[in-house]
Image (cartoon, rainbow over all chains, first blue to last red; front, side):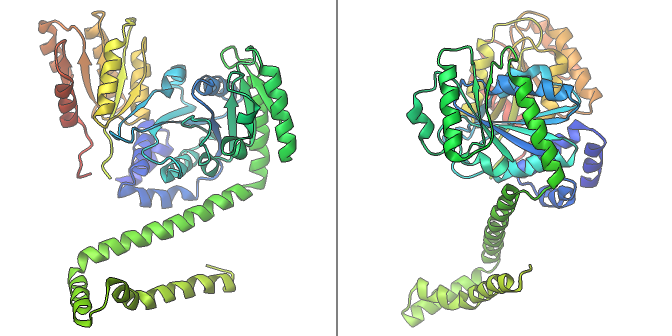
Length: 326
Length: 135
């Protein structure tokens, strides 16, 4: 059944692709199999994070940018992330409203995702959803994130290039120097350049880029009218081209892989352990008896019980480093 | 982890009074659902293609201007054509009683008229949603 869904998605069925994304997002039982299957086909997608405070015009920008890139023959995936209520677990995913004209175009796939509680840390599902879109032929994946303006550190893990969108009304220069959003942005984009203060902001940002030793420009746009969008699109296209040349292993992707390996190890092992504990309740019972009989403590009992295992793990990890292979 | 129910809320056709749709959207969020809010003046094609990409459980339509028979029929046809008719369609608005039965026969899962309570709507959606907790 899963094979058929993959096949249909590869043949262009958005319905099947949507199901795959749902499985991956929800970490369904189907997900691991699918991810293993498609991993080899993914990696050619270039992911662009678009972040910034609410009202900066991210959605409008993405809509305009998509039109231009479509015109240049690219296929685009757009993932729009809105905050999930920490109280109810629900979310209003309303970014899509601003680019409804893109609905139904074959070369665009738009998906809305709730942050689902991942705020400081990256939502692992996001990285996998990007991969899925890449595996099924989308050249760019644009990720619009929850825009608090100051806490966007996670997007740089999922995106190959992160753009911080600002508007002239967004506060003074001290705001710029605050760590977080400006630290992890590769590119700055000032939207609504028809507003007062735009030139000053752009100039400050150029200074900041120089301070950081960053090479990229600061872009100015009026997303509503389309001004400046072609230039930004051209820049992204160049990035995409040079990325294709180097193939997949740019430093950021290595960083992402490393993060994923550590996370998988931790998660997989913890999950396995939890299941084993469930299935071996009598072992736990006997440990309890042992603690009582020996007048010892849970700390001692567990340490004694697991020492070999932990040592074995350590040997495996250090052994790998010395040997230089997995 | 229980997966949230995903509902698309949209207003097809020309009617622009979206207060009702917004109230529902917020109510569903309070009930822990993910609401893809697609706004006003959407074509049936836009609504269906969004519903498919977002893999929603339910499409919630708000139609106040009286064109419900035509619009709903087109939407249901498009869902069938795209093999997405497992997505359930519900409708809110001042729908005349005589039409409610016809809509049901067409394939609408439920019609909500004025006066129905949020809790009732949430409950109906939960029962209709494809996503079962056991999945």
